[in-house]
Image (cartoon, rainbow, N blue to C red; front, side):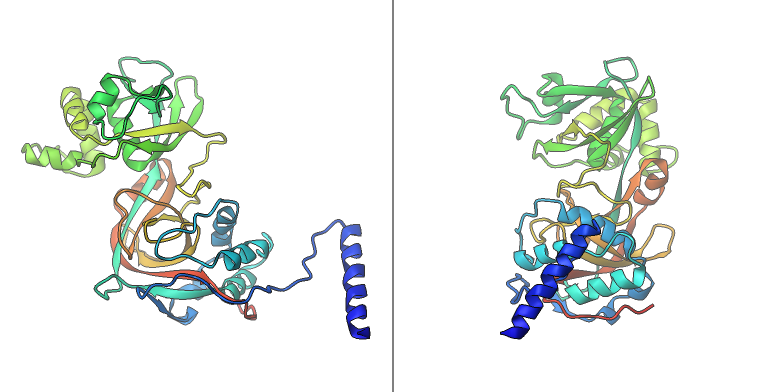
Length: 367
């Protein structure tokens, strides 16, 4: 009894001292017991020693991205679902933003259990592609160069689901936000977001708002089927450049792709993922949200388009219509031309590990 009173007095005095110092003092340790996570057989429990390059990754940047997940409204859906109380507990006890790499690595090891993800056939590798947020010239009104609208979701009740792109544009089923070249608009629709640089120098950020739910029809494949080969081949660069030089053909093949993406303007101009949080350059990935609860840490091991090994902790904060399957992800490379150089050529096999919140077990930080 006396011991309990002493502990209460000590805790009360400590809290008073914390308040007087105007600092945040968390005197507690994680207390949640039990684990009601949904972990299917495609996840195999492993140790952190099984994660290639784990000790070499600067996980401070992953923590910054995970902090964004903690601010989001997590949807506990899919086939891989963390224990809600465990996940929320981790978010309440994040390390300081000024903590060193060793401390943050130890925090992840103390609070998350890694699992290697396998495909339904038992294989351990899958495809890693890349995406980015392009920066393109834009206009507030229609001009000879800015000949295609970037539209927001219609507010007049008109249906757009199942309506092909050509009909949406011609009947203006939506609210024109800005205008740009039709080829650049197609590129932004493929990426799901982009920056517009208006003629007065203003930068505007457009993020994904909705889609008409029709399938995507590859522009490059349409050119192939017509026997048309751009001078520099079928790379994205070559195709876009060729179409800009042939505007009639561009309009024909782009409208023959029935898929249409609507946007909304974001303030501040961050790239926002499906989770509703800003995406972090080469720390956010898009995954299949019919399988995974978005917001979880994921360790990836693959190669970049220039052949370099890419092994690092990332956070699942986005999804995409082409991102389907267990070991499948799209790496977010950031904004602009530099990001494009990596994103457009990213097409490599690799392993994937997901970190599920677990009951706290102390791990000592080591360098």
